[in-house]
Length: 622
Image (tube, rainbow, N blue to C red; front, side, top):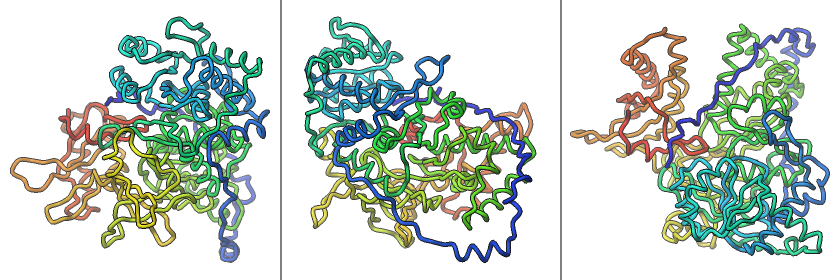
Protein backbone atom coordinates (compact mmCIF):
# COMPACT_ATOMS: atom_id res chain seq x y z
CA UNK A 1 0.00 0.00 0.00
CA UNK A 2 1.19 3.52 -0.68
CA UNK A 3 0.68 7.07 0.45
CA UNK A 4 0.14 9.51 -2.42
CA UNK A 5 1.89 12.40 -0.72
CA UNK A 6 2.76 14.01 -4.04
CA UNK A 7 -0.47 13.08 -5.85
CA UNK A 8 -2.35 16.34 -5.50
CA UNK A 9 -4.60 18.07 -7.98
CA UNK A 10 -2.52 21.06 -9.13
CA UNK A 11 -3.48 24.70 -8.63
CA UNK A 12 -5.19 25.37 -11.96
CA UNK A 13 -4.91 28.91 -13.31
CA UNK A 14 -7.70 30.41 -15.40
CA UNK A 15 -7.85 33.94 -16.83
CA UNK A 16 -10.48 36.50 -15.78
CA UNK A 17 -14.01 35.94 -17.09
CA UNK A 18 -15.24 38.99 -19.04
CA UNK A 19 -18.49 37.88 -20.73
CA UNK A 20 -18.64 41.34 -22.32
CA UNK A 21 -20.35 40.13 -25.50
CA UNK A 22 -23.31 38.39 -23.80
CA UNK A 23 -25.69 41.30 -24.26
CA UNK A 24 -25.07 41.15 -28.02
CA UNK A 25 -26.54 37.63 -28.31
CA UNK A 26 -30.08 38.14 -29.55
CA UNK A 27 -31.45 34.89 -28.15
CA UNK A 28 -30.95 35.97 -24.53
CA UNK A 29 -33.88 38.36 -24.88
CA UNK A 30 -36.60 35.91 -23.84
CA UNK A 31 -40.39 36.15 -23.92
CA UNK A 32 -41.05 33.91 -20.90
CA UNK A 33 -44.80 33.60 -21.43
CA UNK A 34 -44.27 32.34 -24.98
CA UNK A 35 -41.44 30.14 -23.73
CA UNK A 36 -43.70 28.44 -21.17
CA UNK A 37 -46.28 27.61 -23.86
CA UNK A 38 -43.66 26.27 -26.23
CA UNK A 39 -42.00 24.22 -23.49
CA UNK A 40 -45.18 22.26 -22.80
CA UNK A 41 -45.26 21.06 -26.41
CA UNK A 42 -41.62 20.03 -26.81
CA UNK A 43 -41.19 17.10 -24.42
CA UNK A 44 -40.25 13.96 -26.37
CA UNK A 45 -38.81 10.67 -25.24
CA UNK A 46 -35.40 9.79 -26.67
CA UNK A 47 -34.66 6.24 -27.78
CA UNK A 48 -31.39 4.42 -27.33
CA UNK A 49 -28.76 4.76 -30.05
CA UNK A 50 -27.93 1.78 -32.26
CA UNK A 51 -25.52 -0.36 -30.25
CA UNK A 52 -22.61 -2.63 -31.15
CA UNK A 53 -22.38 -6.40 -30.71
CA UNK A 54 -18.70 -7.29 -30.44
CA UNK A 55 -17.48 -10.58 -28.95
CA UNK A 56 -13.73 -9.89 -28.83
CA UNK A 57 -11.32 -6.97 -28.88
CA UNK A 58 -9.58 -8.51 -31.90
CA UNK A 59 -12.81 -8.24 -33.87
CA UNK A 60 -12.82 -4.53 -32.99
CA UNK A 61 -9.12 -4.23 -33.85
CA UNK A 62 -9.49 -5.67 -37.33
CA UNK A 63 -12.56 -3.57 -38.11
CA UNK A 64 -11.05 -0.26 -36.93
CA UNK A 65 -7.76 -1.00 -38.70
CA UNK A 66 -9.62 -1.29 -41.99
CA UNK A 67 -12.30 1.38 -41.51
CA UNK A 68 -10.29 4.19 -39.88
CA UNK A 69 -6.79 3.56 -41.27
CA UNK A 70 -6.05 7.18 -42.21
CA UNK A 71 -7.80 8.81 -39.23
CA UNK A 72 -5.81 10.19 -36.30
CA UNK A 73 -5.95 7.78 -33.37
CA UNK A 74 -3.61 9.34 -30.82
CA UNK A 75 -1.99 12.64 -29.93
CA UNK A 76 0.98 12.50 -27.59
CA UNK A 77 3.91 14.69 -26.63
CA UNK A 78 7.09 12.66 -26.70
CA UNK A 79 9.03 15.85 -25.90
CA UNK A 80 7.44 18.48 -23.59
CA UNK A 81 8.99 21.29 -25.64
CA UNK A 82 7.49 20.07 -28.91
CA UNK A 83 3.94 19.90 -30.29
CA UNK A 84 1.71 16.86 -29.92
CA UNK A 85 2.59 14.08 -32.36
CA UNK A 86 -0.35 12.69 -34.34
CA UNK A 87 -0.47 8.92 -34.85
CA UNK A 88 -2.94 7.33 -37.26
CA UNK A 89 -4.92 4.12 -36.83
CA UNK A 90 -2.74 2.60 -39.56
CA UNK A 91 0.49 3.42 -37.72
CA UNK A 92 -0.87 2.22 -34.38
CA UNK A 93 -2.24 -1.08 -35.70
CA UNK A 94 0.95 -1.72 -37.71
CA UNK A 95 2.96 -1.41 -34.49
CA UNK A 96 0.55 -3.68 -32.59
CA UNK A 97 0.84 -6.39 -35.25
CA UNK A 98 4.64 -6.03 -35.40
CA UNK A 99 5.00 -6.24 -31.62
CA UNK A 100 2.63 -9.21 -31.44
CA UNK A 101 4.40 -11.03 -34.26
CA UNK A 102 7.85 -10.68 -32.68
CA UNK A 103 6.73 -11.49 -29.13
CA UNK A 104 4.97 -14.67 -30.25
CA UNK A 105 7.38 -15.92 -32.91
CA UNK A 106 10.84 -14.66 -31.99
CA UNK A 107 10.59 -14.27 -28.22
CA UNK A 108 8.21 -17.23 -27.74
CA UNK A 109 5.90 -15.45 -25.31
CA UNK A 110 2.65 -16.80 -26.73
CA UNK A 111 0.14 -17.36 -23.89
CA UNK A 112 2.60 -16.05 -21.26
CA UNK A 113 1.72 -13.47 -18.56
CA UNK A 114 3.31 -10.11 -19.37
CA UNK A 115 3.40 -7.19 -16.93
CA UNK A 116 2.85 -3.70 -18.38
CA UNK A 117 3.90 -0.83 -16.12
CA UNK A 118 4.34 2.85 -16.83
CA UNK A 119 2.61 6.18 -17.31
CA UNK A 120 0.02 6.70 -20.06
CA UNK A 121 2.10 6.55 -23.20
CA UNK A 122 1.80 5.31 -26.77
CA UNK A 123 3.85 2.18 -25.99
CA UNK A 124 1.48 1.21 -23.17
CA UNK A 125 -1.48 1.28 -25.59
CA UNK A 126 0.41 -0.78 -28.19
CA UNK A 127 1.49 -3.36 -25.59
CA UNK A 128 -1.99 -3.82 -24.12
CA UNK A 129 -3.66 -4.18 -27.52
CA UNK A 130 -1.05 -6.74 -28.62
CA UNK A 131 -1.85 -8.82 -25.52
CA UNK A 132 -5.60 -8.71 -26.16
CA UNK A 133 -5.19 -9.62 -29.82
CA UNK A 134 -3.25 -12.81 -29.25
CA UNK A 135 0.08 -12.58 -27.43
CA UNK A 136 -0.82 -13.68 -23.92
CA UNK A 137 -2.25 -12.45 -20.63
CA UNK A 138 -1.82 -8.75 -19.91
CA UNK A 139 -0.99 -7.79 -16.33
CA UNK A 140 -1.37 -3.99 -16.04
CA UNK A 141 0.35 -2.76 -12.87
CA UNK A 142 0.00 0.51 -10.97
CA UNK A 143 3.11 2.57 -11.78
CA UNK A 144 3.01 4.22 -8.34
CA UNK A 145 3.55 1.01 -6.37
CA UNK A 146 6.82 0.79 -4.41
CA UNK A 147 9.47 -1.70 -5.55
CA UNK A 148 8.54 -4.46 -3.09
CA UNK A 149 4.87 -4.41 -4.15
CA UNK A 150 5.75 -4.43 -7.87
CA UNK A 151 7.96 -7.44 -7.19
CA UNK A 152 5.16 -9.12 -5.25
CA UNK A 153 2.64 -8.60 -8.10
CA UNK A 154 5.11 -10.02 -10.64
CA UNK A 155 5.58 -13.13 -8.51
CA UNK A 156 1.83 -13.53 -7.84
CA UNK A 157 1.00 -13.19 -11.53
CA UNK A 158 3.67 -15.74 -12.55
CA UNK A 159 4.79 -13.28 -15.21
CA UNK A 160 7.62 -14.17 -17.60
CA UNK A 161 8.18 -10.74 -19.20
CA UNK A 162 7.90 -7.09 -18.21
CA UNK A 163 7.24 -4.14 -20.50
CA UNK A 164 8.13 -0.96 -18.62
CA UNK A 165 8.44 2.77 -19.31
CA UNK A 166 11.75 4.60 -19.18
CA UNK A 167 10.59 6.39 -16.01
CA UNK A 168 10.35 3.01 -14.26
CA UNK A 169 13.84 1.90 -15.35
CA UNK A 170 15.51 2.48 -11.99
CA UNK A 171 12.86 0.64 -9.99
CA UNK A 172 12.95 -2.33 -12.41
CA UNK A 173 16.77 -2.44 -12.15
CA UNK A 174 16.42 -2.50 -8.39
CA UNK A 175 14.31 -5.70 -8.37
CA UNK A 176 15.74 -7.40 -11.48
CA UNK A 177 17.98 -9.82 -9.62
CA UNK A 178 15.02 -11.00 -7.52
CA UNK A 179 13.11 -12.04 -10.65
CA UNK A 180 14.94 -15.03 -12.18
CA UNK A 181 11.67 -16.23 -13.76
CA UNK A 182 11.51 -13.14 -16.02
CA UNK A 183 12.79 -14.00 -19.51
CA UNK A 184 12.73 -10.46 -20.89
CA UNK A 185 12.80 -6.93 -19.52
CA UNK A 186 11.43 -4.76 -22.35
CA UNK A 187 11.98 -1.01 -22.07
CA UNK A 188 9.46 1.23 -23.83
CA UNK A 189 10.74 3.78 -26.33
CA UNK A 190 14.17 2.14 -26.44
CA UNK A 191 16.21 0.95 -29.42
CA UNK A 192 18.55 -1.19 -27.31
CA UNK A 193 19.42 -4.56 -28.90
CA UNK A 194 18.84 -7.81 -27.00
CA UNK A 195 21.53 -8.19 -24.36
CA UNK A 196 20.99 -10.93 -21.81
CA UNK A 197 17.39 -10.47 -20.68
CA UNK A 198 17.11 -6.79 -21.64
CA UNK A 199 15.82 -5.46 -24.95
CA UNK A 200 14.31 -2.25 -26.33
CA UNK A 201 10.63 -2.05 -27.27
CA UNK A 202 11.43 -0.40 -30.63
CA UNK A 203 13.88 -3.18 -31.43
CA UNK A 204 11.13 -5.79 -31.01
CA UNK A 205 8.69 -3.78 -33.14
CA UNK A 206 11.28 -3.45 -35.92
CA UNK A 207 12.02 -7.17 -35.75
CA UNK A 208 8.29 -7.86 -36.04
CA UNK A 209 8.04 -5.62 -39.10
CA UNK A 210 10.89 -7.53 -40.71
CA UNK A 211 9.15 -10.85 -40.03
CA UNK A 212 5.93 -9.50 -41.58
CA UNK A 213 7.84 -8.19 -44.59
CA UNK A 214 9.11 -11.73 -45.12
CA UNK A 215 5.56 -13.11 -45.16
CA UNK A 216 4.79 -13.88 -41.49
CA UNK A 217 1.07 -13.21 -40.94
CA UNK A 218 0.65 -15.64 -38.04
CA UNK A 219 -0.29 -13.00 -35.45
CA UNK A 220 -3.28 -11.81 -37.46
CA UNK A 221 -4.44 -15.41 -37.78
CA UNK A 222 -4.51 -16.07 -34.04
CA UNK A 223 -8.12 -16.79 -33.07
CA UNK A 224 -9.40 -15.45 -29.80
CA UNK A 225 -11.76 -17.37 -27.54
CA UNK A 226 -14.13 -14.69 -26.14
CA UNK A 227 -14.15 -16.42 -22.73
CA UNK A 228 -10.42 -17.05 -22.48
CA UNK A 229 -8.55 -15.46 -19.53
CA UNK A 230 -6.68 -12.49 -21.10
CA UNK A 231 -6.22 -9.79 -18.44
CA UNK A 232 -5.15 -9.97 -14.79
CA UNK A 233 -5.70 -6.78 -12.79
CA UNK A 234 -4.96 -6.44 -9.12
CA UNK A 235 -7.62 -4.28 -7.46
CA UNK A 236 -6.72 -1.08 -5.67
CA UNK A 237 -7.94 -2.50 -2.39
CA UNK A 238 -9.86 0.38 -0.77
CA UNK A 239 -11.46 -1.94 1.76
CA UNK A 240 -9.17 -4.98 1.77
CA UNK A 241 -5.93 -6.26 0.33
CA UNK A 242 -5.66 -6.39 -3.46
CA UNK A 243 -7.24 -9.34 -5.25
CA UNK A 244 -6.40 -10.48 -8.77
CA UNK A 245 -9.35 -9.98 -11.13
CA UNK A 246 -9.43 -12.26 -14.18
CA UNK A 247 -11.03 -10.76 -17.28
CA UNK A 248 -11.69 -12.18 -20.72
CA UNK A 249 -12.07 -10.63 -24.20
CA UNK A 250 -15.85 -10.76 -23.96
CA UNK A 251 -15.81 -8.73 -20.74
CA UNK A 252 -13.87 -5.95 -22.47
CA UNK A 253 -15.78 -6.05 -25.77
CA UNK A 254 -19.05 -5.92 -23.80
CA UNK A 255 -17.98 -2.54 -22.39
CA UNK A 256 -18.19 -1.08 -25.89
CA UNK A 257 -21.54 -2.79 -26.44
CA UNK A 258 -22.68 -1.36 -23.09
CA UNK A 259 -21.80 2.28 -23.76
CA UNK A 260 -22.80 2.74 -27.42
CA UNK A 261 -26.62 2.62 -26.90
CA UNK A 262 -26.39 5.34 -24.20
CA UNK A 263 -23.72 7.76 -25.42
CA UNK A 264 -23.16 9.01 -28.96
CA UNK A 265 -19.49 9.09 -29.95
CA UNK A 266 -18.07 9.00 -33.47
CA UNK A 267 -14.83 9.59 -35.39
CA UNK A 268 -15.08 13.35 -34.83
CA UNK A 269 -14.73 12.93 -31.07
CA UNK A 270 -11.52 13.14 -29.09
CA UNK A 271 -11.17 11.72 -25.57
CA UNK A 272 -8.74 13.27 -23.09
CA UNK A 273 -6.68 10.65 -21.25
CA UNK A 274 -5.66 11.75 -17.76
CA UNK A 275 -6.54 8.74 -15.55
CA UNK A 276 -4.08 5.83 -15.16
CA UNK A 277 -4.34 3.16 -17.86
CA UNK A 278 -3.78 0.24 -15.50
CA UNK A 279 -7.29 0.96 -14.17
CA UNK A 280 -10.13 -0.64 -16.17
CA UNK A 281 -12.10 2.62 -16.26
CA UNK A 282 -9.43 4.27 -18.43
CA UNK A 283 -8.20 1.23 -20.37
CA UNK A 284 -11.71 0.08 -21.31
CA UNK A 285 -13.71 3.31 -21.71
CA UNK A 286 -10.84 5.70 -22.34
CA UNK A 287 -8.98 3.46 -24.80
CA UNK A 288 -10.93 0.54 -26.26
CA UNK A 289 -14.18 2.52 -26.67
CA UNK A 290 -12.75 5.40 -28.77
CA UNK A 291 -10.65 2.89 -30.75
CA UNK A 292 -13.81 0.94 -31.63
CA UNK A 293 -15.62 4.08 -32.79
CA UNK A 294 -12.88 5.76 -34.82
CA UNK A 295 -12.39 8.56 -32.29
CA UNK A 296 -9.00 9.89 -31.19
CA UNK A 297 -7.24 10.04 -27.81
CA UNK A 298 -5.20 12.97 -26.50
CA UNK A 299 -2.74 11.75 -23.88
CA UNK A 300 -2.28 14.24 -21.04
CA UNK A 301 1.36 14.71 -20.00
CA UNK A 302 0.45 14.64 -16.32
CA UNK A 303 -1.81 16.31 -13.76
CA UNK A 304 0.02 19.65 -13.79
CA UNK A 305 -0.43 19.87 -17.56
CA UNK A 306 -4.20 19.30 -17.62
CA UNK A 307 -5.22 22.86 -18.51
CA UNK A 308 -2.56 23.57 -21.20
CA UNK A 309 -3.05 20.09 -22.72
CA UNK A 310 -6.83 20.60 -22.85
CA UNK A 311 -6.28 23.90 -24.60
CA UNK A 312 -3.79 22.46 -27.08
CA UNK A 313 -5.65 19.26 -28.03
CA UNK A 314 -9.30 20.47 -27.93
CA UNK A 315 -10.92 17.21 -26.70
CA UNK A 316 -14.67 16.64 -26.84
CA UNK A 317 -14.89 14.19 -23.93
CA UNK A 318 -13.05 13.49 -20.69
CA UNK A 319 -13.20 10.65 -18.17
CA UNK A 320 -12.67 11.95 -14.68
CA UNK A 321 -12.92 11.13 -11.00
CA UNK A 322 -14.93 13.38 -8.64
CA UNK A 323 -11.85 15.05 -7.12
CA UNK A 324 -10.75 16.29 -10.54
CA UNK A 325 -14.23 17.56 -11.51
CA UNK A 326 -14.64 19.22 -8.11
CA UNK A 327 -11.34 21.06 -8.45
CA UNK A 328 -12.08 22.29 -11.97
CA UNK A 329 -15.46 23.50 -10.71
CA UNK A 330 -13.94 25.31 -7.73
CA UNK A 331 -11.16 26.98 -9.72
CA UNK A 332 -13.43 28.14 -12.54
CA UNK A 333 -16.01 29.49 -10.10
CA UNK A 334 -13.35 31.23 -8.01
CA UNK A 335 -12.21 32.99 -11.21
CA UNK A 336 -15.82 33.98 -12.01
CA UNK A 337 -16.27 35.45 -8.50
CA UNK A 338 -12.96 37.36 -8.66
CA UNK A 339 -13.99 38.73 -12.06
CA UNK A 340 -17.20 40.07 -10.50
CA UNK A 341 -19.31 38.05 -12.94
CA UNK A 342 -21.02 35.58 -10.57
CA UNK A 343 -24.39 37.30 -10.81
CA UNK A 344 -24.24 37.50 -14.61
CA UNK A 345 -23.19 33.85 -14.94
CA UNK A 346 -26.04 32.68 -12.69
CA UNK A 347 -28.49 34.81 -14.63
CA UNK A 348 -27.26 33.41 -17.95
CA UNK A 349 -27.54 29.85 -16.61
CA UNK A 350 -31.22 30.53 -15.89
CA UNK A 351 -31.83 32.08 -19.32
CA UNK A 352 -29.94 29.45 -21.30
CA UNK A 353 -31.63 26.59 -19.43
CA UNK A 354 -35.02 28.06 -20.31
CA UNK A 355 -34.04 28.41 -23.96
CA UNK A 356 -32.56 24.92 -24.14
CA UNK A 357 -35.82 23.45 -22.85
CA UNK A 358 -37.49 24.63 -26.07
CA UNK A 359 -34.66 23.56 -28.36
CA UNK A 360 -32.62 26.77 -28.48
CA UNK A 361 -29.10 26.01 -27.20
CA UNK A 362 -26.82 29.05 -26.97
CA UNK A 363 -24.72 27.87 -24.03
CA UNK A 364 -21.56 27.61 -26.12
CA UNK A 365 -21.96 31.24 -27.18
CA UNK A 366 -22.76 32.56 -23.72
CA UNK A 367 -20.15 30.53 -21.81
CA UNK A 368 -17.51 30.63 -24.56
CA UNK A 369 -14.74 31.79 -22.20
CA UNK A 370 -15.33 28.83 -19.87
CA UNK A 371 -15.34 26.46 -22.86
CA UNK A 372 -12.13 27.99 -24.18
CA UNK A 373 -10.42 27.40 -20.83
CA UNK A 374 -11.27 23.69 -21.25
CA UNK A 375 -10.13 23.46 -24.87
CA UNK A 376 -13.17 24.90 -26.62
CA UNK A 377 -14.83 21.64 -27.73
CA UNK A 378 -15.61 19.76 -24.51
CA UNK A 379 -19.14 18.33 -24.67
CA UNK A 380 -19.02 15.31 -22.30
CA UNK A 381 -17.55 14.82 -18.84
CA UNK A 382 -17.96 11.39 -17.26
CA UNK A 383 -17.41 11.03 -13.52
CA UNK A 384 -17.03 7.64 -11.87
CA UNK A 385 -15.15 5.77 -9.11
CA UNK A 386 -16.84 7.62 -6.22
CA UNK A 387 -19.89 9.76 -5.37
CA UNK A 388 -19.90 13.44 -6.34
CA UNK A 389 -21.96 16.37 -5.09
CA UNK A 390 -24.97 16.65 -7.42
CA UNK A 391 -24.64 20.45 -7.32
CA UNK A 392 -21.33 20.16 -9.20
CA UNK A 393 -22.77 17.86 -11.84
CA UNK A 394 -25.72 20.22 -12.26
CA UNK A 395 -23.37 23.16 -12.80
CA UNK A 396 -21.46 21.26 -15.51
CA UNK A 397 -24.81 20.60 -17.20
CA UNK A 398 -25.82 24.24 -16.74
CA UNK A 399 -22.84 25.55 -18.68
CA UNK A 400 -23.70 23.21 -21.54
CA UNK A 401 -21.47 20.17 -21.02
CA UNK A 402 -23.16 16.76 -20.68
CA UNK A 403 -22.34 15.47 -17.22
CA UNK A 404 -22.60 11.68 -17.13
CA UNK A 405 -21.96 9.25 -14.32
CA UNK A 406 -20.91 5.66 -14.58
CA UNK A 407 -20.94 2.84 -12.08
CA UNK A 408 -18.96 -0.35 -11.91
CA UNK A 409 -15.95 -2.06 -10.40
CA UNK A 410 -12.76 -3.71 -11.62
CA UNK A 411 -14.76 -6.93 -11.28
CA UNK A 412 -17.20 -5.67 -13.93
CA UNK A 413 -14.42 -4.46 -16.25
CA UNK A 414 -15.79 -1.84 -15.21
CA UNK A 415 -19.16 -0.71 -16.65
CA UNK A 416 -22.40 -1.96 -15.07
CA UNK A 417 -24.49 1.23 -15.14
CA UNK A 418 -24.33 4.56 -16.95
CA UNK A 419 -26.43 7.69 -17.30
CA UNK A 420 -27.47 8.12 -20.96
CA UNK A 421 -26.45 11.41 -22.57
CA UNK A 422 -30.13 12.01 -23.43
CA UNK A 423 -31.29 11.48 -19.81
CA UNK A 424 -28.35 12.28 -17.50
CA UNK A 425 -30.24 12.38 -14.14
CA UNK A 426 -27.48 14.20 -12.25
CA UNK A 427 -26.96 12.51 -8.88
CA UNK A 428 -27.70 9.04 -10.18
CA UNK A 429 -24.97 6.50 -10.92
CA UNK A 430 -26.90 5.51 -14.06
CA UNK A 431 -29.20 2.75 -15.21
CA UNK A 432 -28.13 -0.81 -15.97
CA UNK A 433 -26.34 -0.97 -19.32
CA UNK A 434 -27.88 -3.15 -22.04
CA UNK A 435 -25.77 -6.21 -21.20
CA UNK A 436 -26.45 -5.95 -17.47
CA UNK A 437 -29.16 -6.19 -14.85
CA UNK A 438 -29.20 -4.65 -11.37
CA UNK A 439 -31.23 -5.58 -8.35
CA UNK A 440 -31.24 -4.65 -4.68
CA UNK A 441 -30.64 -7.43 -2.17
CA UNK A 442 -32.83 -7.40 0.94
CA UNK A 443 -33.98 -3.79 0.61
CA UNK A 444 -34.89 -1.89 3.79
CA UNK A 445 -37.94 0.33 4.27
CA UNK A 446 -36.28 2.98 2.05
CA UNK A 447 -35.56 0.47 -0.73
CA UNK A 448 -31.84 0.46 0.11
CA UNK A 449 -29.77 -2.69 0.07
CA UNK A 450 -26.68 -4.22 -1.48
CA UNK A 451 -26.44 -3.76 -5.25
CA UNK A 452 -26.31 -7.09 -7.12
CA UNK A 453 -25.02 -7.14 -10.71
CA UNK A 454 -25.55 -9.57 -13.55
CA UNK A 455 -23.54 -8.56 -16.62
CA UNK A 456 -21.57 -9.72 -19.65
CA UNK A 457 -18.78 -7.54 -18.23
CA UNK A 458 -18.59 -9.63 -15.01
CA UNK A 459 -15.14 -11.12 -14.36
CA UNK A 460 -14.27 -14.81 -14.68
CA UNK A 461 -13.34 -14.79 -10.98
CA UNK A 462 -10.54 -13.93 -8.58
CA UNK A 463 -7.11 -15.25 -9.53
CA UNK A 464 -6.17 -18.39 -7.57
CA UNK A 465 -8.86 -17.65 -4.99
CA UNK A 466 -11.93 -19.82 -5.49
CA UNK A 467 -13.18 -19.14 -1.98
CA UNK A 468 -13.15 -15.34 -2.47
CA UNK A 469 -14.89 -15.81 -5.84
CA UNK A 470 -17.66 -17.86 -4.22
CA UNK A 471 -18.07 -15.15 -1.59
CA UNK A 472 -19.03 -12.56 -4.21
CA UNK A 473 -20.54 -14.51 -7.14
CA UNK A 474 -23.55 -16.81 -6.89
CA UNK A 475 -25.77 -18.55 -9.44
CA UNK A 476 -29.53 -18.12 -9.36
CA UNK A 477 -32.12 -20.77 -10.25
CA UNK A 478 -31.67 -19.92 -13.95
CA UNK A 479 -27.93 -20.44 -13.83
CA UNK A 480 -27.21 -16.70 -14.14
CA UNK A 481 -24.14 -15.36 -12.31
CA UNK A 482 -24.78 -12.49 -9.89
CA UNK A 483 -22.10 -10.36 -8.24
CA UNK A 484 -22.25 -8.94 -4.72
CA UNK A 485 -20.93 -5.42 -5.35
CA UNK A 486 -20.48 -4.44 -1.71
CA UNK A 487 -22.20 -1.14 -2.51
CA UNK A 488 -25.41 0.04 -0.88
CA UNK A 489 -27.99 1.78 -3.05
CA UNK A 490 -31.53 1.91 -4.37
CA UNK A 491 -33.25 1.94 -7.76
CA UNK A 492 -35.86 4.54 -8.68
CA UNK A 493 -39.05 3.80 -10.62
CA UNK A 494 -37.18 4.16 -13.94
CA UNK A 495 -34.39 1.81 -12.95
CA UNK A 496 -31.79 4.51 -12.21
CA UNK A 497 -29.31 3.56 -9.51
CA UNK A 498 -28.40 5.77 -6.55
CA UNK A 499 -25.41 4.70 -4.43
CA UNK A 500 -25.55 5.59 -0.75
CA UNK A 501 -22.61 3.71 0.74
CA UNK A 502 -20.37 0.66 0.99
CA UNK A 503 -21.30 -2.47 2.93
CA UNK A 504 -17.86 -2.65 4.49
CA UNK A 505 -17.91 1.04 5.47
CA UNK A 506 -21.34 0.98 7.10
CA UNK A 507 -21.46 1.92 10.79
CA UNK A 508 -24.14 -0.03 12.67
CA UNK A 509 -25.56 1.48 15.87
CA UNK A 510 -26.53 -0.55 18.93
CA UNK A 511 -30.21 -0.37 17.96
CA UNK A 512 -29.52 -1.57 14.43
CA UNK A 513 -29.48 1.76 12.58
CA UNK A 514 -27.14 1.95 9.58
CA UNK A 515 -24.94 5.00 9.01
CA UNK A 516 -23.23 5.34 5.62
CA UNK A 517 -20.10 7.52 5.91
CA UNK A 518 -20.25 8.53 2.24
CA UNK A 519 -23.55 10.38 2.81
CA UNK A 520 -22.01 12.50 5.57
CA UNK A 521 -18.75 13.02 3.65
CA UNK A 522 -20.64 14.53 0.73
CA UNK A 523 -22.21 17.05 3.11
CA UNK A 524 -18.86 17.88 4.74
CA UNK A 525 -17.33 18.23 1.27
CA UNK A 526 -19.47 21.34 0.74
CA UNK A 527 -17.68 23.15 3.60
CA UNK A 528 -15.08 25.45 2.00
CA UNK A 529 -12.78 25.17 5.04
CA UNK A 530 -12.45 21.39 4.52
CA UNK A 531 -10.09 20.14 1.78
CA UNK A 532 -10.75 16.40 2.31
CA UNK A 533 -12.42 14.24 4.91
CA UNK A 534 -13.21 10.70 6.00
CA UNK A 535 -16.00 9.70 8.37
CA UNK A 536 -15.75 6.50 10.40
CA UNK A 537 -16.93 4.81 13.58
CA UNK A 538 -14.23 5.00 16.25
CA UNK A 539 -14.28 2.57 19.18
CA UNK A 540 -13.63 4.14 22.57
CA UNK A 541 -13.05 2.42 25.88
CA UNK A 542 -16.16 2.36 28.06
CA UNK A 543 -18.46 3.24 25.15
CA UNK A 544 -20.85 0.69 23.65
CA UNK A 545 -21.49 2.78 20.55
CA UNK A 546 -18.86 3.63 17.98
CA UNK A 547 -18.10 7.36 18.03
CA UNK A 548 -18.96 8.99 14.68
CA UNK A 549 -15.68 10.71 13.85
CA UNK A 550 -14.64 13.05 11.06
CA UNK A 551 -10.97 12.97 10.11
CA UNK A 552 -10.36 16.21 8.23
CA UNK A 553 -7.61 17.88 6.18
CA UNK A 554 -8.21 21.64 6.50
CA UNK A 555 -8.27 23.88 3.43
CA UNK A 556 -5.71 26.33 4.82
CA UNK A 557 -5.88 28.65 1.80
CA UNK A 558 -9.65 29.03 2.15
CA UNK A 559 -9.43 29.42 5.94
CA UNK A 560 -6.85 32.20 5.59
CA UNK A 561 -8.97 34.01 3.00
CA UNK A 562 -12.17 33.74 5.06
CA UNK A 563 -10.89 33.99 8.65
CA UNK A 564 -7.50 35.72 8.51
CA UNK A 565 -3.83 34.77 8.74
CA UNK A 566 -1.66 33.37 11.54
CA UNK A 567 -4.42 31.34 13.19
CA UNK A 568 -3.47 28.77 15.79
CA UNK A 569 -4.24 25.07 15.36
CA UNK A 570 -6.90 25.41 18.04
CA UNK A 571 -8.56 28.30 16.21
CA UNK A 572 -8.57 26.36 12.94
CA UNK A 573 -10.08 23.39 14.74
CA UNK A 574 -12.81 25.60 16.26
CA UNK A 575 -13.66 27.11 12.86
CA UNK A 576 -14.08 23.66 11.28
CA UNK A 577 -16.04 22.33 14.26
CA UNK A 578 -18.51 25.22 14.02
CA UNK A 579 -19.12 24.31 10.36
CA UNK A 580 -19.52 20.62 11.25
CA UNK A 581 -22.12 21.56 13.89
CA UNK A 582 -24.16 23.19 11.10
CA UNK A 583 -24.03 19.90 9.16
CA UNK A 584 -25.08 18.01 12.29
CA UNK A 585 -28.28 20.10 12.39
CA UNK A 586 -29.18 18.62 8.99
CA UNK A 587 -28.55 15.03 10.12
CA UNK A 588 -30.67 12.63 12.13
CA UNK A 589 -29.30 12.66 15.69
CA UNK A 590 -27.73 9.18 15.55
CA UNK A 591 -25.74 10.21 12.44
CA UNK A 592 -24.31 13.37 14.01
CA UNK A 593 -20.52 13.74 14.14
CA UNK A 594 -19.31 13.53 17.72
CA UNK A 595 -15.57 13.90 17.25
CA UNK A 596 -13.20 15.86 14.99
CA UNK A 597 -9.66 14.81 14.10
CA UNK A 598 -7.41 17.23 12.21
CA UNK A 599 -5.12 15.39 9.80
CA UNK A 600 -1.79 16.94 8.82
CA UNK A 601 -0.56 14.52 6.15
CA UNK A 602 -2.29 13.17 3.04
CA UNK A 603 -4.82 10.33 3.10
CA UNK A 604 -3.65 6.96 1.85
CA UNK A 605 -5.25 6.67 -1.60
CA UNK A 606 -5.64 4.55 -4.67
CA UNK A 607 -4.61 5.89 -8.09
CA UNK A 608 -8.23 6.87 -8.75
CA UNK A 609 -7.97 9.05 -5.65
CA UNK A 610 -10.26 7.01 -3.38
CA UNK A 611 -9.27 6.92 0.28
CA UNK A 612 -8.09 3.50 1.47
CA UNK A 613 -10.31 3.46 4.53
CA UNK A 614 -9.08 0.25 6.10
CA UNK A 615 -5.49 1.56 6.03
CA UNK A 616 -6.50 4.96 7.42
CA UNK A 617 -8.68 3.52 10.17
CA UNK A 618 -5.95 1.12 11.29
CA UNK A 619 -3.26 3.76 11.64
CA UNK A 620 -3.14 6.49 14.30
CA UNK A 621 -4.09 10.01 13.25
CA UNK A 622 -1.27 12.52 13.21
